[in-house]
Image (cartoon, rainbow, N blue to C red):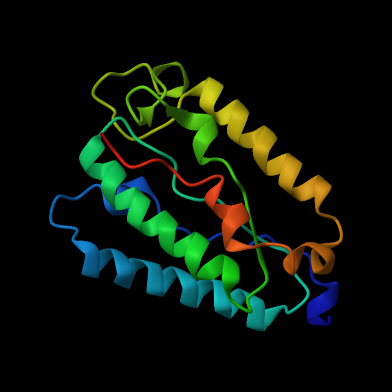
Length: 162
């Protein structure tokens, strides 16, 4: 079967679990991002016509981790969204952040107070809606690719941690 005829789902990621370690410095975040971008490029090379949707790393209940998340997400918005890899970026970050604390909204987090990283059921529901919205409102991928400007991507970027 030709590559265009094969329907498959590819998943590659970097997330809060990758960014949670205290020894993760800016250089290691850039290295993690480089590996992530390489995977995206491999997917694009394998199937040049596929739709690649990128979700920024969601906020956590930790300012220290969110600083690393912000660096990684900035690379997504400033580099990956502007690359020739033609990705769609889900503008999801602000839906999850408590503007008063700059942390993950407690109503969207897992109820376990010791879990600083993961979203709970309500958070998953919101994320699913955002992903579906991105998929179903961007049927003409080529039309949207040229309109993903950095200034538009910044609307979904997080504020600086407190």
